[in-house]
Image 1 (tube, helix red, strand yellow):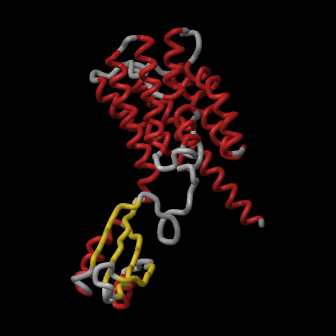
Image 2: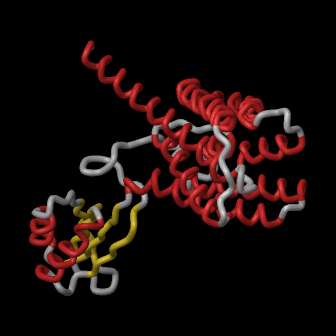
Length: 293
């Protein structure tokens, strides 16, 4: 029991350390690459940017925190208090870091706004992915995306965030008539969505092979020797009506050449389908994380 509590304590400490680092990276990227280069953010940070330009006395971080209140109330109802507590911590930490770094440092604009746009989007995406990987968000579009994920399960978190961010950027453009800033913002948010999905789903990328063959036992033996988990299904060919064996296995991309070599050596006439698998959980792969991802 004591050991279990000790392990849980280490895990919680590691997760909240990850959240804090992600929030700091988010704040630095925002104040360093977005604000001085007039690149609009998406989500509630983008809304807070709009409010800050209209009413400069309201800090961006404080405005973000206020805008997130109704979203967190909905999140508690749908996801429970535990997950929303980590997101509440992340939202408060990111809001604090945004106002703190803005007060302590004055970042000069970059000579090329496109460079700021690309690297800003990548850093924001990495920071948000760091939070989502441990089940937290900074609120705003990333939390809204996780809530929408309950309904739109087939769409990735990054793409849902992108849709929300683009809507906010359009609102910013309508308010200030700054088309160039909006275009840079859309590019940055697109890069952000790619970086976020790469961090969230990249660790779990795998492929699935479906091998339909006549020499099922020998094929199974040879593929198992490659340290693969195999599922065997007995079937009949729809055209030939002959007995067939279907072997299904999930594997890491590095093993694709070895699998093809085995198939060609054992049964060159085998029918093989190899496709990408975005989420693979279980022995030999990642542990099952939050369903919302």
